[in-house]
Length: 241
Ligand SMILES: [Zn+2]
Image 1 (cartoon, rainbow, N blue to C red):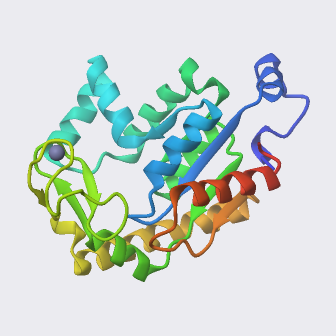
Image 2 (cartoon, helix red, strand yellow):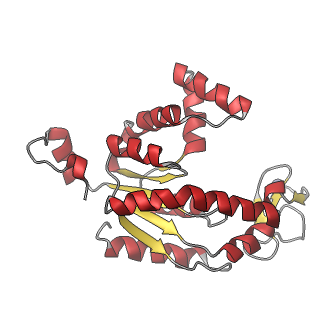
């Protein structure tokens, strides 16, 4: 499936070794509110591979105090979008770490076709998990989301996880609030941005004949375990796990 690493004469020891090890390199796509982070961490746990969210690896790079990290910190501080070259470099460092030796699951990357191309140069991708959630379900789910002012815990006043006492945090008792961008109009705009951003990526990976594990029509009250099982079944069917 991967044209760039396909030739057998160019196969060195590292590549051979890579093939023998059970390794699964996954990307997860899904609109805001699809629970991408939740599924990424469940899959990571299940397969003993790291879930890599760009925000986390940015923070980790900043902590190292490297020149690259300082660069990232400048962008984060100013609130500007971190440019592709820098994101790619941070990710590349990460993929070279032993933790990702058995595979990984990428959450929030690639966001652009340019990033996807850069990723193809770094490694192969085995499958793309695509969480398809109808727009109305996203609006319904996110507009009922509330966050604790104090500890950041996330709740949903209509669906799980519900707070025991309305508008109060189970963990610390603080008041819950609704984020500005969880208001229906803003959610619809976020969905438009997501679709505009993701469509070219789907086209790109389809052209490259990547394997897709698409979970269609996820409903607002879909239990996490059931959706997770659908993903696992899909991966099995794609002969990946
Ligand atoms: Zn709290």
